[in-house]
Picture 1 (cartoon, rainbow over the protein chains, first blue to last red):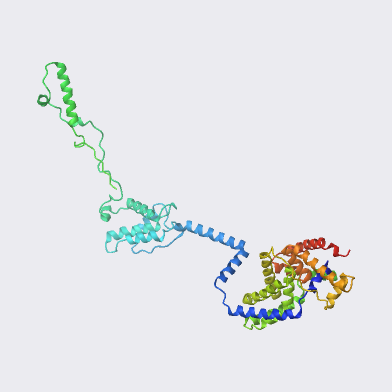
Picture 2 (cartoon, each protein chain N blue to C red; picture 1 turned 30 degrees about the vertical axis):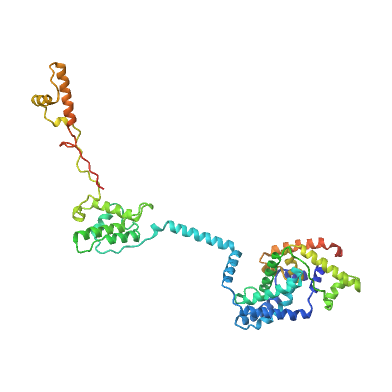
Length: 254
Length: 211
């Protein structure tokens, strides 16, 4: 079998073939030197390399996509920046630490939230406002992110409210009124009472005077009772419970 | 001792090949430095072997000439990317084999022979033909021609990969390792393909084989 296949080695072109072969090859070689290859040849070569090593490239692409996905999902809680603010009061920081959660163990907030609060901070010339604003900033910087679903803005609001509940600063001094932060009941609801109890009993005179204009006069006792009941009902209906002194009123402030 | 040397030769490249590879690398460095004429030395050195491989894979001399020229042009264009990790010979064979495989796959349905004549002026070829036939004169020429056609016919019945392995091993004399590098497959795959291809060829050419 090997001898038979070796016969193929004896199949060789004549000598003149090589003369023509070399002439054509040199012509092609010169053309290859002169002719600039189009720019898309590089792209096709790149695709050829990728198709040759498609398994490693696919694995790398999958890993990169996974990394990007994980990084994107955890981006809000991972962007850690320390905020440098002027006028941070140590006493406020200490009071915050004493609340139960150590400030050192708390992760700082993201730069978006801190930047927003910093923009809210007042200039340090106003003493009261500086105290409150810097305290707010410090709290914001040290506030924990309790839930990943919370936005930094909601965290800032929550910390601010907690601080104002705990602090001794007069709220009206800082913001003028605390009605922006808490829904306030305008008045305490009084116990329910019979509205007619506050009225003076109708005197016989007045009743007779009123009935004299509205009802015909009857002599029988039955008609007397009927007219008396009707007059009471009419008086009761004529009263406006919302205009009385003991009436209740509700105010809703947002 | 001789058997172990023969086995080693089939498995790994010979030391002569390594010396040859070092010499080729020096020429390649000249070409990379800008000496375009140095590439002609490489062409002159490998043109017959490259053409022989392509011709035995295609069984068409015109296609073989075009593909061999294209292989040299591709090697010339890409020689700046040649790092010397493999030998230039293996690298050039790889370009030639890949170009031929692409050509054969493109023209899978179009195949016709255009055979070279067997050169009897070479003493080795003459001895080989003498060993294959007892006839002389015109009968000898016609027998050789018939044997050549049957052999090419049997080769074309092999798949492209099996044909390539048989060509590189039996006709061109490459080792298993070199064939694996050229075809970008494992040595085991090369052995398996070689064994299967020989079985098929024996089945096709059993009338011309002596017991």
